[in-house]
Image (tube, rainbow, N blue to C red):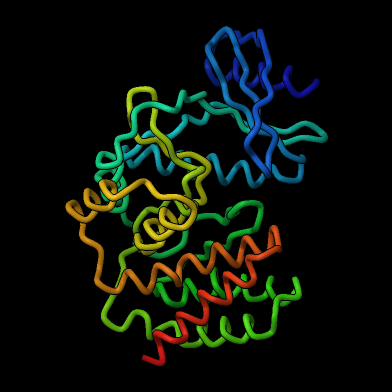
Length: 293
């Protein structure tokens, strides 16, 4: 059975009615997966595909979308079906029309609502990916320990393997060891996080509803989500004002924002190389300077 025949069959089972694919349109914009819009007898469907050995990545993404949907704070695409052929893994979701009127204040309020969904431990029930990089989510009762072993630590090891400058590696190793100093007066709760909240992973529906997609879900410090909204484009001042009105950020956020975004810049160095090493070095250097006072 070829890919789209399998997708049609699985959608028929999931939706409990025959689904016929009338048209397949290739979509651009992604650097990790191939994406398609299917015009079907059951409506539009969004499908992403990758190599068959990436089936676990799609399983984790589907679980993350379900976790976010259960919180009912923000719109996310509904998971319809997933599967794999001998050569390709795939994930089928509701096709969401984006590009509606921006509603940043509504988005800020809704994100604060999402973050009020908490767990007993940091991490999650399964590992997932950040971009295409494996992301460890081993549950921890201690946030600092989680960030050391599941976030900063693995990126330091990638940096060594990738031949990053020794000065950058040394600064990151010292930050790893000194991490408790950033949390002396701050004890975050394990909040439900999108996990990869740059501007390419959120938008506004045709009705203006804030919408999230492409998550890297885990439970962690809510500041990590907010920090990423400032890394590659931002939702605007009204978003942050509304978030703070619903749940004010701690005064130490300004410093920890750099700490959390360092993880993503190190990951971009791992994935893409280029100038991300020098950006990471500047961030690590500024964090070391904060510790020196």
